[in-house]
Length: 387
Image 1 (cartoon, one colour):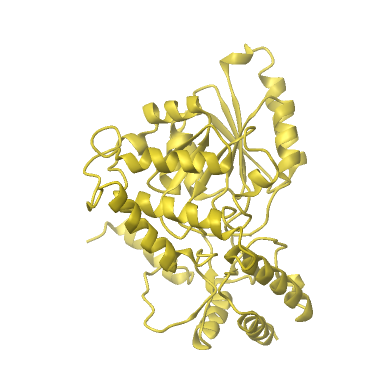
Image 2: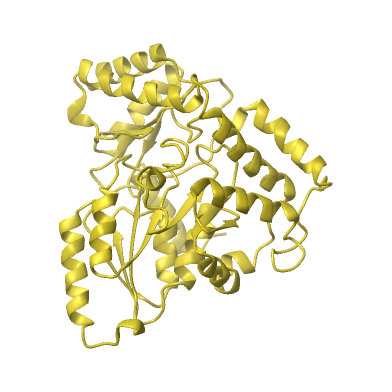
């Protein structure tokens, strides 16, 4: 029996057509919903290679049996972290159980009392939760608005000018690809701006890894100028996450990140799958018909088809695998999502309060395995529904 005030909160969700429910689909739908951008979650080569890695290292066991600081730090962790760090050309990588754990661990331990965190207003919920655990002051800046960020940096610089410089730190946090919009900030200008004010930079690359090779940060050559999060549950097709940065940062997180210290480590099979997925991504990217090449072609085709179907006014501009059509109102967007479902397409409606009221949307995720005919049919159905 729920307390009355909790039941009222559930009732309010029902009344606003915003009640979340867990659903299992019994029919095979065309996937325009999952984050499996490269199809790695069902890749048989990765699956087989993970098993080979376990046998090679005599780790045929089901669980880690403890936290990483107790019995759970099996040898695959070190091997995988070295491979990830080498791939991204950074000093160190530290694997966490999930992107949520990594963000909460970083922001709950790194920013200190007297520090300041400046974050994009659309930042992921896991970072917001981590910020709430921090003793630092936090202020949001307008989405992807570097002028607003500069205003806040200048304001903090003025307020702290009488404080000894090494007595505080300013942290700026954003995403390289935003999960609910699919858009990106001008990261090169953002890093240059932050460096003018000696601010620390943290970039969440969850939805960029795999879609933009090893990430937008690597593409721009900014790897040693920022700290960042990479996750494995999207394009990498498995589970877990890592924070990339210096050896000193890694050591600090091992000592103070509670979401790492006080949880059972990932089982060997999970870490073997991460390593197999990274190895496959590196080798596949060199092939002329790679999954990444197919995905990029589908993104370009989708963008062209939006123009052909005259749907530009509904879509947020995006060069990523995430494309969102803004269709205000929970009832409206749920209805169109249901129409897609009946036509055999899995497209999710994103409702308020997940996004602000009036910003409800269809979130369309593109994959390497979607056909151009499926993309064309999907957008034709959308155009018909909107008419």
